[in-house]
Image (tube, rainbow, N blue to C red; front, side, top):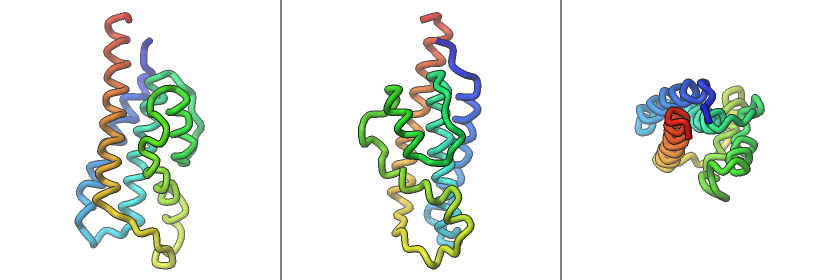
Length: 138
């Protein structure tokens, strides 16, 4: 199977958001909603990269639950794997346009950073494995 070239582009974009997450994680000058937005974007783009690599058409959505359901249906992740990331969906839009001080989400930046990092590693493996099998004609 030849992976969709968009898979590597999406993965690269996810990596850029994750670099931002890493730099913001310990710096309280960055608001939680900004940190959460980039964490959500890294997870969203990584999910879409995996789906694209598998040749799966996906919705244009920021909803991580929808994307994770598609990942599970297509054998990219199992069950509740990475389910903690689903809570980041609200950072994609809602928390970007709402007074964040009115919302208490109890964001644990270290835990979020770790889970996004593990999810990105899964995306890297998925895209790499499909790319490698496409090159060898398997």
